[in-house]
Length: 113
Image (tube, rainbow, N blue to C red; front, side, top):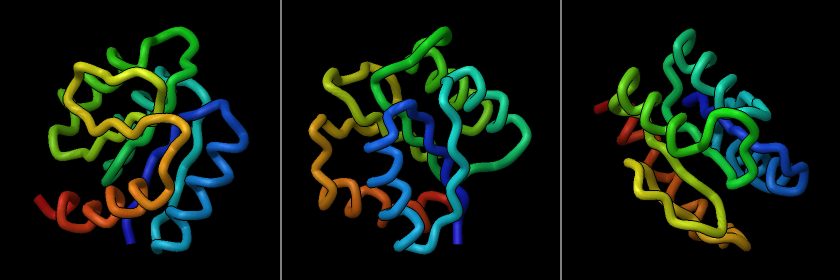
């Protein structure tokens, strides 16, 4: 079992992704702001971090850059309307839940590297 950080203010997205992650056997920590996600990643080694496209304060791209600097092996997934140029996987909105499931299936192997 791995711990995943979910950063979103969208209650529908949180409910959907949280359910999938828990069904796949992952622990999930939820935060609303990218800056808090970075702070939590400093304290805990997450296998993956998932962001959506509605940030306040620190931008999602900046948060991903910081996360990849402090935790280079973390799997970063961006769920949103735009494609990010940063080092992360992108899933378009509306989120294809099957695509999301396939993506999180890679968490165990990525967490070991």
